[in-house]
Amino acid sequence: MLGIRQDDAVGAGDLRDRVVIVTGAGKGLGRAYALDMAARGASVVVNNRWVDREQASSAQTVVAEIRAAGGRAVANLDPAEDPETGAALVAQALAEFGRLDAVVSNAGVPETQRLHRQTREGFRAVFDINFFGAFHLVHAAWPVLSAAPAGRIVVSASSAGLHGGDGMAAYASSKAALIGLVRGLAIEGRSRDLMINAIAPYAVTAMTQQHLSPGLAARMDPAAVAPLVSWLVGEACDVTGQTLVCGGGRVRAATAVEGPPVELEEGRIGAALHTAMRVNPREAYGDAHQSFAAFMDERPALAVVD
Image 1: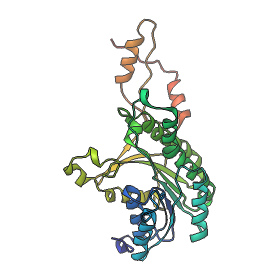
Image 2: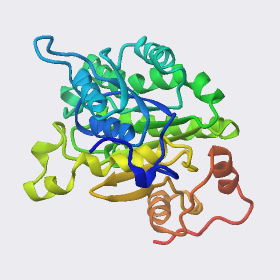
Image 3: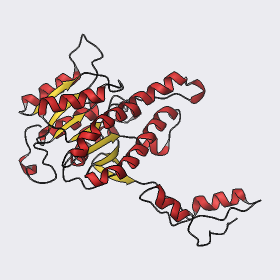
Image 4: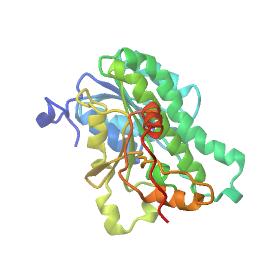
Protein backbone atom coordinates (compact mmCIF):
# COMPACT_ATOMS: atom_id res chain seq x y z
CA MET A 1 0.00 0.00 0.00
CA LEU A 2 1.80 3.06 -1.26
CA GLY A 3 0.43 6.45 -2.21
CA ILE A 4 0.38 9.28 0.34
CA ARG A 5 -1.57 8.29 3.45
CA GLN A 6 -4.17 11.00 3.82
CA ASP A 7 -4.72 10.30 7.52
CA ASP A 8 -1.06 11.05 8.04
CA ALA A 9 -0.94 14.13 5.84
CA VAL A 10 -0.45 16.27 8.93
CA GLY A 11 1.48 15.19 12.01
CA ALA A 12 4.02 12.51 12.91
CA GLY A 13 3.37 10.43 9.80
CA ASP A 14 4.00 13.26 7.33
CA LEU A 15 7.32 12.82 5.51
CA ARG A 16 6.51 14.97 2.50
CA ASP A 17 9.44 17.11 1.34
CA ARG A 18 11.88 14.93 3.30
CA VAL A 19 14.68 12.98 1.62
CA VAL A 20 15.90 9.76 3.19
CA ILE A 21 18.71 7.30 2.36
CA VAL A 22 18.02 3.67 3.29
CA THR A 23 20.78 1.06 2.92
CA GLY A 24 20.03 -2.63 2.52
CA ALA A 25 16.64 -1.57 1.20
CA GLY A 26 16.17 -4.11 -1.58
CA LYS A 27 14.45 -6.68 0.62
CA GLY A 28 13.33 -7.52 4.14
CA LEU A 29 13.31 -4.76 6.71
CA GLY A 30 15.02 -2.19 4.50
CA ARG A 31 12.45 -2.67 1.77
CA ALA A 32 9.64 -2.28 4.31
CA TYR A 33 11.21 0.94 5.57
CA ALA A 34 11.61 2.39 2.07
CA LEU A 35 8.04 1.54 1.08
CA ASP A 36 6.56 2.95 4.27
CA MET A 37 8.52 6.21 4.01
CA ALA A 38 7.56 6.63 0.37
CA ALA A 39 3.92 6.03 1.31
CA ARG A 40 4.23 8.91 3.76
CA GLY A 41 5.63 11.21 1.09
CA ALA A 42 9.40 10.89 1.48
CA SER A 43 11.79 10.78 -1.47
CA VAL A 44 13.99 7.75 -0.96
CA VAL A 45 17.46 6.72 -2.09
CA VAL A 46 17.17 2.93 -2.11
CA ASN A 47 20.53 1.22 -1.63
CA ASN A 48 21.23 -2.49 -2.04
CA ARG A 49 24.24 -4.20 -3.54
CA TRP A 50 23.67 -5.91 -6.88
CA VAL A 51 25.02 -9.41 -6.30
CA ASP A 52 23.63 -11.47 -9.20
CA ARG A 53 23.97 -9.43 -12.37
CA GLU A 54 21.85 -11.96 -14.25
CA GLN A 55 18.89 -11.05 -12.05
CA ALA A 56 17.08 -7.74 -11.70
CA SER A 57 18.54 -5.51 -9.00
CA SER A 58 16.44 -5.65 -5.82
CA ALA A 59 17.04 -1.92 -5.26
CA GLN A 60 15.75 -1.09 -8.73
CA THR A 61 12.74 -3.33 -8.17
CA VAL A 62 11.83 -1.43 -4.99
CA VAL A 63 12.31 1.89 -6.78
CA ALA A 64 9.98 0.73 -9.56
CA GLU A 65 7.38 -0.26 -6.96
CA ILE A 66 7.58 3.15 -5.30
CA ARG A 67 7.37 5.03 -8.59
CA ALA A 68 4.45 2.94 -9.81
CA ALA A 69 2.52 4.11 -6.75
CA GLY A 70 3.35 7.75 -7.44
CA GLY A 71 6.33 8.09 -5.10
CA ARG A 72 9.85 9.39 -5.69
CA ALA A 73 12.88 7.15 -5.43
CA VAL A 74 16.25 6.37 -6.99
CA ALA A 75 18.41 3.27 -6.74
CA ASN A 76 21.98 2.89 -5.59
CA LEU A 77 23.74 -0.44 -6.15
CA ASP A 78 26.98 0.12 -4.23
CA PRO A 79 28.03 -2.23 -1.39
CA ALA A 80 27.39 -0.59 1.97
CA GLU A 81 30.77 -1.58 3.39
CA ASP A 82 32.73 0.22 0.64
CA PRO A 83 34.34 3.26 2.34
CA GLU A 84 33.22 5.46 -0.57
CA THR A 85 29.57 4.38 -0.57
CA GLY A 86 28.49 6.72 2.22
CA ALA A 87 29.77 9.81 0.42
CA ALA A 88 28.33 8.57 -2.89
CA LEU A 89 24.89 8.09 -1.34
CA VAL A 90 24.90 11.59 0.15
CA ALA A 91 26.01 13.10 -3.15
CA GLN A 92 23.31 11.16 -5.01
CA ALA A 93 20.57 12.36 -2.64
CA LEU A 94 21.66 15.97 -3.05
CA ALA A 95 21.96 15.67 -6.82
CA GLU A 96 18.62 13.93 -7.32
CA PHE A 97 16.46 15.68 -4.73
CA GLY A 98 18.39 18.80 -3.70
CA ARG A 99 18.52 17.99 0.01
CA LEU A 100 19.02 15.28 2.62
CA ASP A 101 17.03 15.01 5.84
CA ALA A 102 17.69 11.53 7.21
CA VAL A 103 19.63 8.31 6.78
CA VAL A 104 18.70 4.78 7.81
CA SER A 105 21.65 2.40 7.97
CA ASN A 106 20.00 -0.99 7.67
CA ALA A 107 22.50 -3.05 5.66
CA GLY A 108 24.00 -5.88 7.67
CA VAL A 109 25.25 -9.43 7.59
CA PRO A 110 24.53 -12.32 9.99
CA GLU A 111 27.25 -14.43 11.54
CA THR A 112 27.31 -17.61 13.59
CA GLN A 113 30.85 -18.73 14.32
CA ARG A 114 32.37 -19.64 17.64
CA LEU A 115 35.55 -17.78 18.35
CA HIS A 116 37.93 -20.74 18.18
CA ARG A 117 36.83 -21.19 14.56
CA GLN A 118 36.67 -17.50 13.73
CA THR A 119 39.45 -15.98 11.64
CA ARG A 120 40.59 -12.41 12.09
CA GLU A 121 39.63 -11.74 8.49
CA GLY A 122 36.13 -13.15 9.02
CA PHE A 123 35.65 -11.14 12.19
CA ARG A 124 36.78 -7.96 10.42
CA ALA A 125 34.46 -8.63 7.48
CA VAL A 126 31.45 -8.65 9.81
CA PHE A 127 32.58 -5.34 11.30
CA ASP A 128 33.20 -3.85 7.85
CA ILE A 129 29.55 -4.33 6.91
CA ASN A 130 27.68 -4.02 10.21
CA PHE A 131 29.66 -1.22 11.86
CA PHE A 132 31.85 0.54 9.33
CA GLY A 133 29.17 0.41 6.64
CA ALA A 134 27.00 2.43 9.02
CA PHE A 135 29.85 4.65 10.15
CA HIS A 136 30.88 5.64 6.62
CA LEU A 137 27.31 6.72 5.84
CA VAL A 138 26.83 8.57 9.13
CA HIS A 139 30.22 10.27 8.80
CA ALA A 140 29.46 11.45 5.25
CA ALA A 141 25.94 12.61 6.12
CA TRP A 142 26.76 14.29 9.44
CA PRO A 143 27.74 17.74 8.05
CA VAL A 144 24.66 17.86 5.82
CA LEU A 145 22.28 16.66 8.51
CA SER A 146 23.84 19.04 11.05
CA ALA A 147 22.85 21.92 8.78
CA ALA A 148 19.39 20.53 8.04
CA PRO A 149 16.44 21.91 10.03
CA ALA A 150 15.65 18.45 11.47
CA GLY A 151 18.36 15.92 10.67
CA ARG A 152 17.65 12.35 11.69
CA ILE A 153 19.71 9.13 11.76
CA VAL A 154 18.62 5.54 12.47
CA VAL A 155 21.05 2.63 12.63
CA SER A 156 20.12 -1.03 12.81
CA ALA A 157 21.44 -2.64 15.99
CA SER A 158 20.32 -5.98 17.43
CA SER A 159 19.31 -7.64 20.67
CA ALA A 160 22.55 -9.58 20.18
CA GLY A 161 24.40 -6.31 20.68
CA LEU A 162 22.55 -5.88 23.96
CA HIS A 163 22.67 -9.42 25.31
CA GLY A 164 25.08 -11.47 23.20
CA GLY A 165 24.45 -14.92 21.75
CA ASP A 166 26.14 -18.28 21.31
CA GLY A 167 28.52 -18.15 18.36
CA MET A 168 27.77 -14.48 17.72
CA ALA A 169 30.89 -12.73 19.01
CA ALA A 170 31.58 -10.77 15.81
CA TYR A 171 27.93 -9.96 15.11
CA ALA A 172 27.12 -9.00 18.71
CA SER A 173 30.19 -6.80 19.14
CA SER A 174 29.60 -5.03 15.80
CA LYS A 175 26.03 -4.23 16.85
CA ALA A 176 27.10 -3.20 20.35
CA ALA A 177 29.61 -0.82 18.76
CA LEU A 178 26.73 0.82 16.88
CA ILE A 179 24.88 1.38 20.15
CA GLY A 180 27.98 3.10 21.53
CA LEU A 181 28.22 5.23 18.39
CA VAL A 182 24.60 6.31 18.81
CA ARG A 183 25.12 7.24 22.47
CA GLY A 184 28.17 9.34 21.66
CA LEU A 185 26.73 11.11 18.63
CA ALA A 186 23.42 11.84 20.34
CA ILE A 187 25.29 14.18 22.67
CA GLU A 188 27.08 15.90 19.77
CA GLY A 189 23.88 16.32 17.79
CA ARG A 190 21.59 17.78 20.45
CA SER A 191 22.50 21.41 19.86
CA ARG A 192 21.81 20.98 16.15
CA ASP A 193 18.44 19.22 16.52
CA LEU A 194 20.15 16.19 14.96
CA MET A 195 18.53 13.10 16.46
CA ILE A 196 20.17 9.67 16.20
CA ASN A 197 18.72 6.39 17.46
CA ALA A 198 19.29 2.67 17.14
CA ILE A 199 16.60 0.14 16.41
CA ALA A 200 16.86 -3.54 17.36
CA PRO A 201 14.20 -5.08 15.11
CA TYR A 202 12.48 -8.44 15.33
CA ALA A 203 11.13 -9.52 11.95
CA VAL A 204 10.97 -12.49 9.63
CA THR A 205 13.69 -12.00 7.02
CA ALA A 206 16.10 -14.19 5.07
CA MET A 207 18.39 -13.86 8.10
CA THR A 208 15.84 -15.02 10.69
CA GLN A 209 13.24 -17.15 8.88
CA GLN A 210 14.89 -20.50 9.61
CA HIS A 211 14.82 -19.76 13.36
CA LEU A 212 11.12 -18.83 13.63
CA SER A 213 8.11 -21.11 13.93
CA PRO A 214 5.37 -20.50 11.33
CA GLY A 215 3.09 -18.96 13.95
CA LEU A 216 5.74 -16.59 15.22
CA ALA A 217 6.87 -15.71 11.70
CA ALA A 218 3.33 -14.65 10.85
CA ARG A 219 3.46 -12.06 13.65
CA MET A 220 6.91 -10.79 12.69
CA ASP A 221 6.12 -8.94 9.44
CA PRO A 222 8.85 -6.38 8.63
CA ALA A 223 6.06 -3.92 7.85
CA ALA A 224 5.20 -3.89 11.58
CA VAL A 225 8.58 -2.28 12.34
CA ALA A 226 8.48 0.29 9.53
CA PRO A 227 6.13 2.86 11.16
CA LEU A 228 8.54 3.34 14.07
CA VAL A 229 11.45 3.93 11.70
CA SER A 230 9.37 6.37 9.66
CA TRP A 231 8.57 8.28 12.86
CA LEU A 232 12.23 8.34 13.87
CA VAL A 233 13.24 10.00 10.57
CA GLY A 234 10.47 12.58 10.75
CA GLU A 235 10.46 16.09 12.19
CA ALA A 236 8.15 14.91 14.99
CA CYS A 237 10.89 12.69 16.46
CA ASP A 238 11.94 14.18 19.79
CA VAL A 239 14.07 11.35 21.21
CA THR A 240 17.77 10.72 20.69
CA GLY A 241 20.45 8.33 21.88
CA GLN A 242 17.93 5.52 22.35
CA THR A 243 18.02 1.83 21.49
CA LEU A 244 14.50 0.71 20.64
CA VAL A 245 13.48 -2.94 20.39
CA CYS A 246 10.59 -3.34 17.96
CA GLY A 247 8.64 -6.16 16.33
CA GLY A 248 5.15 -7.55 15.94
CA GLY A 249 3.52 -4.19 16.63
CA ARG A 250 5.40 -3.67 19.91
CA VAL A 251 8.24 -1.40 21.01
CA ARG A 252 10.33 -1.16 24.16
CA ALA A 253 13.35 0.88 25.18
CA ALA A 254 16.64 -0.78 26.11
CA THR A 255 18.70 1.24 28.55
CA ALA A 256 22.14 0.80 30.10
CA VAL A 257 21.78 1.00 33.87
CA GLU A 258 24.10 0.89 36.87
CA GLY A 259 23.40 -0.14 40.43
CA PRO A 260 24.69 1.60 43.55
CA PRO A 261 28.37 1.14 44.46
CA VAL A 262 29.27 -1.59 46.94
CA GLU A 263 32.28 -1.50 49.24
CA LEU A 264 35.09 -3.61 47.76
CA GLU A 265 36.69 -5.49 50.66
CA GLU A 266 39.85 -7.55 50.61
CA GLY A 267 38.97 -11.20 51.14
CA ARG A 268 35.31 -10.65 50.17
CA ILE A 269 35.72 -9.69 46.51
CA GLY A 270 33.35 -12.37 45.21
CA ALA A 271 30.68 -11.50 47.75
CA ALA A 272 31.02 -7.82 46.85
CA LEU A 273 30.54 -8.58 43.14
CA HIS A 274 27.45 -10.71 43.75
CA THR A 275 26.01 -8.02 46.00
CA ALA A 276 26.64 -5.39 43.32
CA MET A 277 24.91 -7.53 40.69
CA ARG A 278 21.67 -7.85 42.63
CA VAL A 279 21.18 -4.60 44.56
CA ASN A 280 18.83 -1.81 43.49
CA PRO A 281 17.92 0.86 42.52
CA ARG A 282 19.33 0.78 39.01
CA GLU A 283 19.96 4.16 37.42
CA ALA A 284 20.41 5.34 33.84
CA TYR A 285 22.72 8.27 33.09
CA GLY A 286 22.76 10.86 30.34
CA ASP A 287 26.46 10.42 29.63
CA ALA A 288 29.70 9.00 31.03
CA HIS A 289 30.40 12.12 33.11
CA GLN A 290 27.12 11.73 34.99
CA SER A 291 27.89 8.07 35.61
CA PHE A 292 31.33 8.91 37.00
CA ALA A 293 29.98 11.64 39.26
CA ALA A 294 27.35 9.27 40.70
CA PHE A 295 29.92 6.50 41.21
CA MET A 296 32.33 8.77 43.08
CA ASP A 297 29.63 10.40 45.21
CA GLU A 298 30.93 10.89 48.76
CA ARG A 299 28.04 9.01 50.31
CA PRO A 300 29.13 5.65 51.79
CA ALA A 301 29.08 2.62 49.49
CA LEU A 302 26.77 -0.25 50.36
CA ALA A 303 28.02 -2.99 52.61
CA VAL A 304 28.71 -6.47 51.27
CA VAL A 305 25.91 -9.01 51.80
CA ASP A 306 27.07 -12.63 52.05
